[in-house]
Image (tube, rainbow, N blue to C red; front, side, top):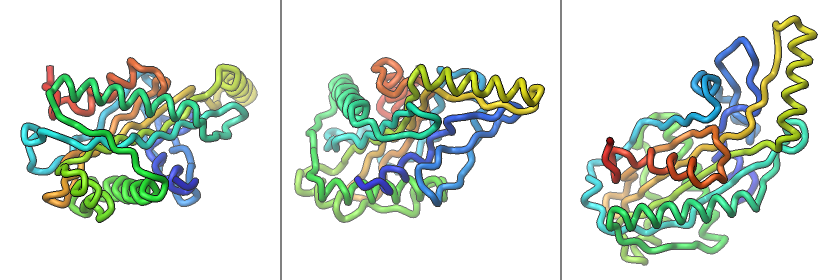
Length: 256
């Protein structure tokens, strides 16, 4: 995925700094044209919490999905080591990609869902990334799935593999080194002291957004779409597993 595509998928990630005295924070500007702002009051209340979006789905019931083509996860985890500048950390990205696959396989076995793993080549992956970017932007704009259909590339892959449904996991996040966090923290405290508490900046150590998307080649639409935002380290197995299962709660997994 080129840098522009990578950055677009990160548009739901919250800021690396939060101004005191306000519950609003700016989304990390991974792209020049991204200017959206989201509320992070829940994040300020607890740095270990997670939030899951409303479930968007078609008329297909989860019981109708007996087999699924599992696409290799799209994983982009950034690191912040100097100031608030981020860079793509391939090591963290690969670790999270493997973890997502292990979590998915565990769920498939738990619910007796037959699956097959699909790893696209570089050219096909580029088309998939573009399609997923379009989907995420469409849902962010309209809040529903009515304006999007299964793209030809993904549809042809599903049909060639004899699968009606395909699962595409996507995760974008960042993590800040401890030394960087404390430097930014004490910098914020210094600003707070100089301004007599009127203004300060509190760094956020980590954040990630996980998307789970199921596509239907027969009905040519999105069967399932949901995302979860988490303030835990994106490469930790337990928080990631909880985040994953929370997304499918009420669909593949029963609500407790």
